[in-house]
Amino acid sequence: MRRKLIAGNWKMNGSLTANEILLAGIKADIGRPDCAVAVCVPAPYLAQCQSLLNGSPVAWGGQDISVHASGAYTGEVAGAMLADFRSTYVIVGHSERRSCHGESNEVVARKAASALASGLTPIVCVGETLEEREAGRTGDVVAAQLDAVLDGLQAEQIAKLVIAYEPVWAIGTGKTATPQMAEEVHALLRSRLIARNPGAAEVVQILYGGSMKPDNAAELMAMPNIDGGLIGGASLKASDFLAIVRAAC
Ligand code: PEP
Image (cartoon, rainbow, N blue to C red; front, side, top):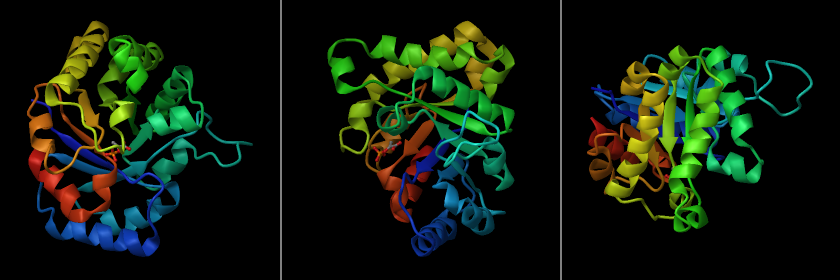
């Protein structure tokens, strides 16, 4: 039985004051959840998360990682820097990075490998655009995105991944995949993992992301291959985030 994971993606939102209020709200009511919980925050706020979340059930992490370990790469954040602030997770290959920053499958694969090399758990995002879905290409697109990452890893490293299926047309739009649509893709992703390492495939959490909210979280997470959520907008309001955590636990 895989433990569920609810990870917030704050994207480029927050301020010291707003974060303090949000994290205090989460900590006040989270209790002792049966599932894993994390927030992935803009890099400047990692120190604040470390200070406010240390000892709580909420882990933290970044939203991107450099493929390089150090050096003349202005603006980049290295895995060792994320690890310095005791990050557990880092999102890689979010569709906003792929579309706004031109990240290819190959770059995403290198980022996932960098995360593992720094002792971080990469949350590897895959997902199709509306155009790709309508052209019947969803399976091919997500399989290619996942396979690029798997190709760069040893079989035993696969067990250390988290995958997030995020249909691009559902991110921040209020449109959600139905549980059946999402499960179909999650099952396909699981089958790709099984082909590489059946033992690892059993333990890898495959999250759904894309307008997951308190009112649709439970039905999505009831599906056999949906092991939690990557939550954007709803992670910015403590009561919504906690409602999704409760739906998972
Ligand atoms: C995301 O950005 O990863 C995401 C899933 O966003 P939202 O929940 O707002 O659709």
